[in-house]
Image (tube, rainbow, N blue to C red; front, side):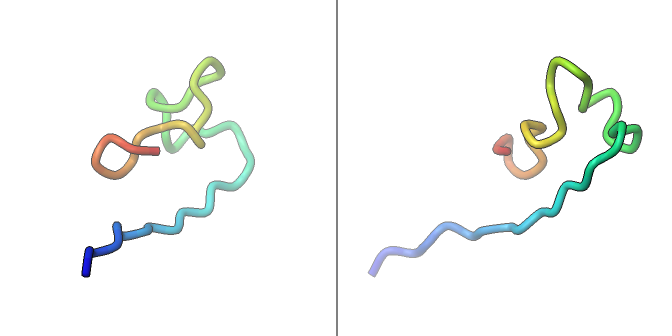
Length: 40
């Protein structure tokens, strides 16, 4: 039996993204920021 990858649910709400700045910016929206092990 192979192990399944762990799924981390993350809810990203609207807004200017100031808490994730400078990771999140207009050219790189917060839904594409790699938060866990370099993956988004």
